[in-house]
Image (tube, rainbow, N blue to C red; front, side, top):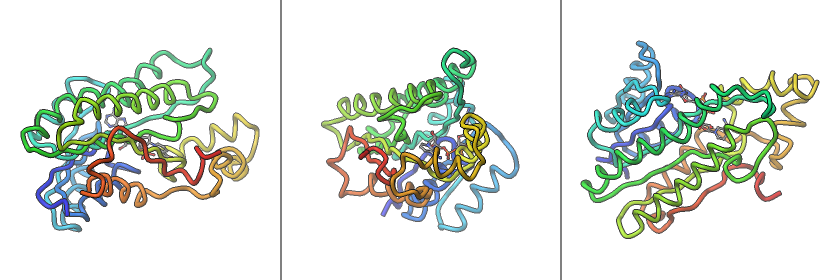
Length: 256
Ligand code: NAD
């Protein structure tokens, strides 16, 4: 059980982050939800999650494109046994047309933010004598596809950061690992369907089967519950010697 542990999950008012937060809470952890907005519905999401699982849950606004806000997310909570770096965005364009501001935003939110949160969380984990860093990377942290240069660069970077953190904490009861999902049906993926259909001159249905799930041999999307379950496993005692590695949840994508 993760009772008594506090988990900070970045980018968790939607999609995989919210799914991971639910599974960690189901396993007993108190959770901190986060995104860059500060709406009533964000706080309500945390309230409902806490009630559902009988844990303490709250929502903390932080725009992770800003280094100070990424660091403040962790320092303002003041305790962090489990850090899940999950926040992410996507932009699809050939490199010669890829907007510099999109490159900068993707690297900031998906790579630099994980550096800042991890730097602030490790001293708190050391103080507590236990810690888990779970980075939500991607099959695109291990392999590439065209037109996603910033995303793929950020995810490969995040896998490298995971290995470095694992080595720096190897002698301590702290682990750092990356989960590499294939395609998971979330708002992020749904927003890519029209772009992909346009790019390949297909209907959206064809784009799902022939392009998006083209490289996912199972031909099924992974679920946010499955990703949450993988995160819970990485937080368990069974995973205490699993560090500095990646776990693919990709229906066979990276086996191809
Ligand atoms: P999503 O759009 O549902 O969730 C992204 C989350 O990040 C949201 O909560 C959003 O508010 C938050 N976010 C975005 N910009 C932020 C910022 N500046 N500051 C704070 N939070 C911010 O997408 P998702 O599919 O759940 O993606 C979650 C993670 O999983 C991402 O890192 C993504 O790259 C990764 N991933 C997703 C898939 C997939 O198929 N959906 C596959 C592999 C990896």
